[in-house]
Image 1 (tube, protein in one colour):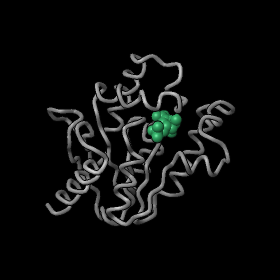
Image 2 (cartoon, protein in one colour):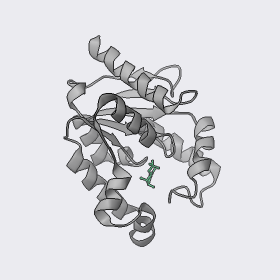
Image 3 (cartoon, helix red, strand yellow):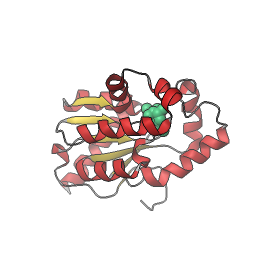
Image 4 (cartoon, protein in one colour):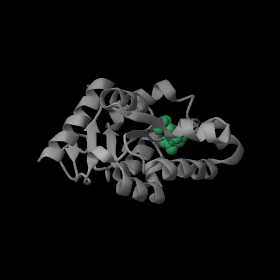
Amino acid sequence: MADADPYGDAVRELPPNVGERPLALIGFMGIGKTTVGGELSRRLGWTVLDTDREVEAHSNMTIREIFDWFGEPRFRELEHEVIAAEAGHTRLIMSLGGGAFIQDANRQLLLERCTVAYLAAPWSHVSRTIQRIKNTRPLLRGRSLSELEQLLASRHPFYDQAHVRVSVPGRNPSQVAGRLLELLDLAVGS
Ligand code: S3P
């Protein structure tokens, strides 16, 4: 999405039948995908699913244990299995782990079967929100702020292939959810 504000609201191109596809929320760790997913679920009456929680339930391990014992590649396999199994359902909101959309197979599948929404914010915002979660995410442990800034910069072009982008700074989760629905309705109606 080439525009003045690379983290601002934007609709790239919506897929057909937005109301019948799962709505997939993507974006960096700590941006609020789970909370916004809950808001959307309440408003739409759709089921919400968090891929991290599904991976934990299926493997009977925490994300941290999977990373520590088997490494990131194994986590990515489990994450892909969840996404492939769920991405076809209707009336479903999927809140995805921050690295899921970076994997080619997931990205292709999600763009094909879901409406993908990028919850976006520049580093100045993300650098504050990750403080709250830095001890709970394996990929944040032991990384300097400048490494994480680079990680966001390297992921942004992938995230930005989403169908729609919603800016998070200055909005609470309910406002983010409301704005996303507005963008989807506007684009659907136009
Ligand atoms: C990851 C994000 C996490 C979780 C795992 C890896 C990532 O999910 O899937 O720790 O690669 O960004 P959240 O985005 O919900 O923190």
